[in-house]
Length: 429
Image (tube, rainbow, N blue to C red; front, side, top):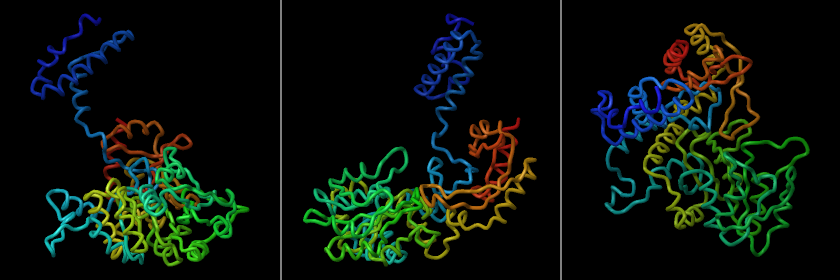
């Protein structure tokens, strides 16, 4: 076939595979197929059935771009795969609230305007011990709002060892500078003392900021002041202490500090994520002193950063589980599951797909607990299955290592096993 033999767009639209389709999307599919066919011909290849190419392009246009995937990497809070999978109870809250109107900002008891924050604030107070709480769209926004409300145009003291870079090249100093506050750096990369903060306090100081080193650790000749030590410095000078916890656990987990403990140790505000170790939707949570939370709530930025009704519904469902049955939260279950249960799942999968069980090490992920190793087990299959598995429905993402594809079963739920086995079988065809 040469270029002159290609059908026109109108001819393709009359083909039975496109004729009954909506005109605009059919035209786009036809033009895309013709462009692909021209490339093939110029490269000396046969483009094949151009109408079939158009039909395939039409199907691709209709396929959702954001899709559910099976995470077989062993990384529990995988940022690239959407971080925390939501609990069924959280999804039920989203479906219930999202399918109609809701009392998002309406007080049902008084019949007047209410606050969207009221739906989760009681739960957050109970779980953290805070006087008040507020939710925005992510943790970077929470810290940004805290500094904008408390320190705009003034200084915030922070350790040089805590000026970290988070995902996709974003650096905390650059984010916080947008708050209008000026960062006053103290100490060194590896050692900072409470005395460094004390010496830096001046007339322009508005707050002390502690940033938890959630996605890295400095070991060896290193020192950082505790929250309690910084709280004493802040109290002596009548300044608020803001503790950016990052990952946000509500219960102690290895060396990851909890929001409750930070507040008990004297932090005035804590900021943490909703979709990392908490296991909920993407959100930034601020909890602490009621007067400070109210200043954040009244700041103009709060409206730009506030969470929507679906986020609040999912967060409410997640927090309710934390209060009564935390094992119902997938992230919590995966982190706590004993290795024997993971191995049993890997053995069932291996028996179904003729794979081999291999001992592995899973990770927490999401910029949390970088040193933690979770004993795990994977089903090892052929390395060449990695590409077709990613292209399948649903996509399956594993880890290629030493010439084999490892399907780590710590991050694969029991109810996904049959689906994963079917995906492996399809990829081998």
